[in-house]
Image (cartoon, rainbow, N blue to C red; front, side, top):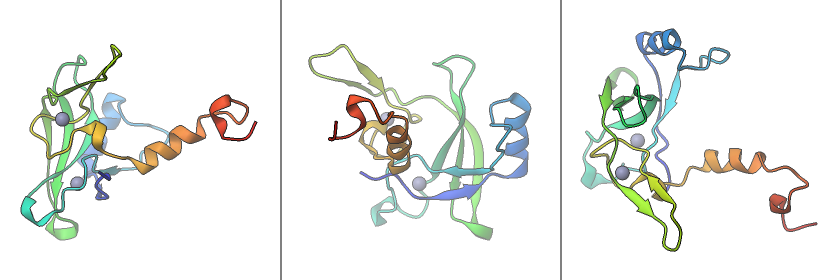
Length: 140
Ligand SMILES: [Zn+2]
Ligand SMILES: [Zn+2]
């Protein structure tokens, strides 16, 4: 499933709080956030399914993280900043000891994070592969 394409502008107070804690990137205080969930605009979800963007982690990896939730856009936008516990789902790969934890909050819309394609994330990952590495492409 593709990632939701919703983008919104953080309210100034949320940006200031992020900068004050050093969680934001000071060199680029771009106050836009992307919804990280899988597409959830299906009619059966109704108009009130909130978009969600991760803001910053909790004090420990297991503590609730801070998320920005919103619905609608422009003057119609409703939003809140809230701490949310992590989704308890785990993905265990057969034949390995690798366990992935879902990167979303508890009771998020389907699917879990490992079933969401992030085109932008893939693009960044590809750029990090050096040209001379064996994984760089089909040509030697
Ligand atoms: Zn969304
Ligand atoms: Zn999940």
